[in-house]
Amino acid sequence: MLTTDTHIIGIQGSYTPDNLPSRILNNVTVPLFTQNQDGLYESKLIQSVKHNANFTRFDFTLFPNIIFTDGKPFTSKDIQLDFKDVKTTWPDNNHVVYETTKSFPPFLAYLTKPIFTVNPFRGIKGDYLITQARFVSGGDRLESLTLTPLVVGKPKLIYKFYRTDSELVTAYKLQEIDEFTTTGSIASDTFKKWSNTVVEESSDYTKVASLFFNLNQPLLKEKDVRLAIYGSIPVRTLQTMGNIAVSPLSPTSNLYDSTIPRIAENPEVNKSILRKFFTQASDSAKFKLSTSFEFINLAHAIQEVIQSAGGKVTVDVSGLQQGELTDLTLGYWSIPPEVNQYFVWHSSQKSKSNITQYSNQKVDKLLEDFRATDSATMQREYMSDFQKKLVEESPAIFLYYPHTFTIRRKK
Image (spheres, rainbow, N blue to C red):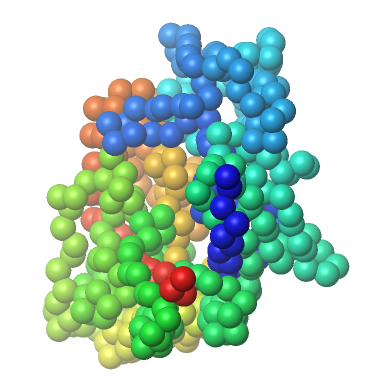
């Protein structure tokens, strides 16, 4: 029989049924494709994939007799993925065809989004079914979600959503929730003293704490200035917050290049480099740094690095929340799950998602070549060269993958 055990989990953030966090979606459904460590794509839904010679047409055949978690049949018409410049047709219930306007070998990388419908809530091949949703009064923001197990032995899950980390901590203290995950070591240090609580430490490799430079700022256009700031940030400070990062890729990716060294920390040499630039351009040696309260100590450390060399930094802890792009932006960056980082760094995206305004012809070419081949070997080579060049140029500094602490009440 199914278990009657209920587990209540707190999650920080504002969510609607259309943007559920992955930890919930992974319980209730699967994506069309996942990528293994060899760079190959696998699927529990698609039986076969055929493409034409120039990679502009992709024909998918579904496995037979797939059903949603609510028992309804799953057909190709339930695959509703919206892509710009891609034509989608459904020849019958077992086939879906995508036609792109240009050759695009890595198309499967963009089909890793979980298959899930909202009205009604249902997924495919999941261990759970969403059976109840409560909303905050007067809106579509979720207050809680109830997941009922479809597998013997698994507990009933209730997810409750809170706007801030401090609300999560309070909810745990009031016994509203049994578990939550935080990146704040202060909270973890508090609960380590509780005899009825277990604190588990791990690392989150889906995001990286990063310092983005606005390359429209005259001094920040100078690579030597960016590298001097990079080499002045204390590594010891970063190590208390997470595992040191170098690359814009996750270490869990099969395309991650672990041989790339971090730029050496050398505060005195780098301070003299910064002082030289700041003295020559005193009017432009003034920066605004946007961040959030979670990063305030690190923001002040970066502020100290720059101001000790004669520059001036104003720290704004509300700018990041408002989406403001200032001279320096410090916060978590969600690493694109499909690995292809064309939209983040290619010069053609400067008015869109390339927030640093970075432009480099070699990087552009590497990103273009990566998108133009389906060879796992060549993709690995292009992505390795891309990582090396980006770290060398440093339009952004990748600081650390955060430590996470799961606070769980003993049963």
